[in-house]
Length: 315
Image 1: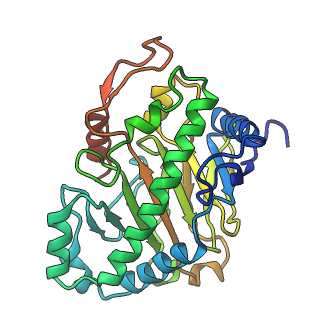
Image 2 (image 1 turned 45 degrees about the horizontal axis):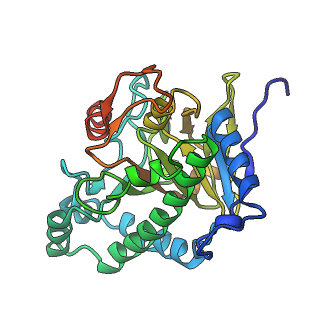
């Protein structure tokens, strides 16, 4: 099809989490392939990342157990201003132009929100659920830091570790990076509302996003020609995309792309649960986001200032 962009599949084994150092023979190829993906469609599938399959599977299983609890048992864990906790169905609307909020639930895990975590434990949240999210957060953080190093090298930054250093506090106070477990219930369980979707058209807020999908899929990515293509699940692959703050930071050298999850088209599809887990990497709160090429194409803005602004538009 004319002007069609496909989401490339890139082998990350040259800098897999299994390695202490990158493989020098293939590292440059990895750098070039990641840069090409992020500077064109803004999305990539990474395979052979080194994140253990069992860690991902456990987080999905424990998440499903939580989301299948009755609504009144999930309510005590409702998300508050610290961004930790449960987000009930039809609370978020990622595309404000849609007439109805999104048909999905979520649970946000932020390790630094210690008081919120302790409060959830007192209300009886499953420790195994939190443990599974924490373990995946830790693995995703490690992969995130390797990806942003690869990006820095692809952009030929004077300090290729600049992005790594700007995310130094991930998982601690002073950084808003979040692991979100998302649950899309069977649409057959809910009355059809015209124009409603599972996840409205949007671009992500921050630096980069790492997405773990189940086998059902549903994610669609917007191409430059305006058409959407399916980001079909690939076993053990991590889908990574650029967020708005990173596009701004790189003065549009890397592109943040809109994406969505529509309702299932087939009657059979309406009976299935869809799950995904996303790691949203954000620069440290105090980081000033200034265009890396010195162009001032976008005015400088604080990382946390931008994040809070975007939250205000979503909730």
